[in-house]
Length: 148
View 1 (cartoon, one colour):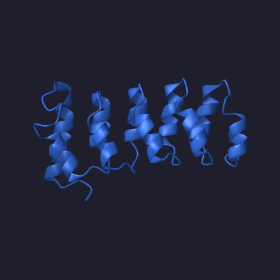
View 2 (tube, rainbow, N blue to C red):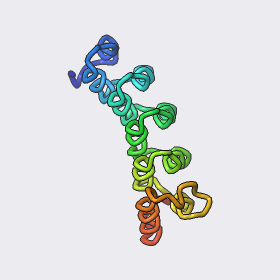
View 3 (cartoon, rainbow, N blue to C red):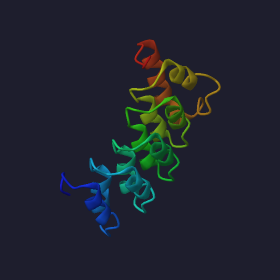
């Protein structure tokens, strides 16, 4: 994909049968919000993940990615450094421990998030699969490795 392609050029190949082309469009610097909307509905999770990671993705795009059936897409959304409190909280409450693991390591995590993960109110508090997440939360809290 040409790095200087315009959004009009990208539009022309948005429906390409090759998922690698659609993946490259999702990663392109000139992809539009409307194009990302379409890519977040793509049949391939790899394309949807790339759309979730796009620097042009808005909060609405990220919310949509967090509702995706594929935990891979949700992990991609959680890997962003520009997530707000609510999006990070949704990652911490994801049904997949892999997504929660990415969320707890996010640079935007706050003290409030960490305390929540360690509280009895946290739904995965007693989950065997969540022990690594809780250990990370405890370590980050003790070392004051959080945002804010």
